[in-house]
Image 1 (tube, helix red, strand yellow):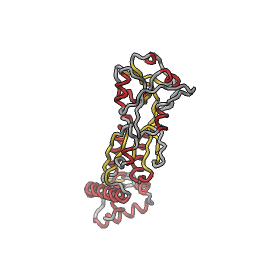
Image 2: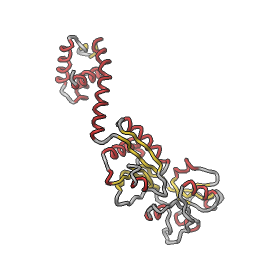
Image 3: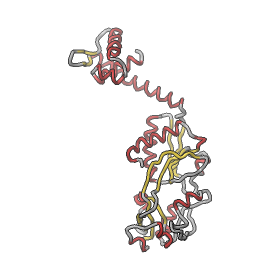
Image 4: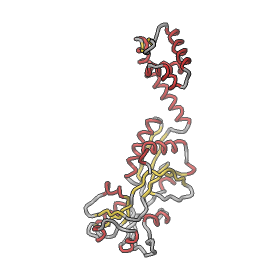
Length: 299
C-alpha cells in the first residue's frame, strides 16, 4: 500500500463520511472514492459497506484499520524525526531562567517540546542574577528567560513571557509594612538592598534598583549582595528594603518580611533572549512552543 492510500483509508475509517474525508485530505470526493475502490480491488473484498445513508467498516476493513494505525504512527514519527534532524532539532537544548515564576512555564514547555521533537533533550538551568549573562556567553545555556531590560549588543530579545506587578519587600516591623501601598518616591526614606555583581549591567541595576527617585532625591543603597535569598534574610533582620515581583511572595514568603504593592512602579517583565550568533530553528521552535502553551496568559 502507498502512503496516500493508507491515509485515505484511515481517514475514511475514522470519519465514515466521504465528504468530510475529502475535506480533511484536501482532495476531491471522487478521488477519495476511486482510491478506496482501487484498494478494495487489490485486496479482493469490500472494506466499507456503503448505503445512501451510511458508511460502515466491514469486518475485513476493521481488521485492516487496526493493523494500519500503528504503521501510520510509525511513519509519522519517522518523518518527524527526519524533519527534526534536518532542522537541527537534535542533541541537548539548555534553557536558563532566573526566577521560579517562569521556571514552571519552561518546564511545561520542555515536556511539550520533547514530545514534538523526541531526538532533542531539554535541560532547564537556574541562572543567578549576580551573573545574568555569563552562562549564555560561556555556551552553558542556549537561550534564557530573565527580568528585562536586556540591552546587550550580542543578544536578540524575543517575546515577553510574563509581566508581574512590582512590590517592595520590607521588614515586618517597618513603618511601610502598615501601608496599603508605597511610591517609588518613598525609596528615598529607606535603605535599598540590591542583588549585584561585576557582571551585572548598569542599565539593569538602575532599572530595578534606582539610585534616584523620579523627583531626583537620592535613594540610599546598602552594600550589594550576591544571592537573592541573602537579600531576603537581610530584609528580615531589618537591614533594608528591596523591590520584587509580586508573584515572588508565593515562593519566598516568610513571617519577618512584608510585601507592599507599589502604586507607581513599572511592572517586572520576563522575556526570552538568546545569542544573536546562536539563533537557530531549534531555539525559535522552543520559544514558539512555550508561547503557544502560555496562550492567552501572555502579556
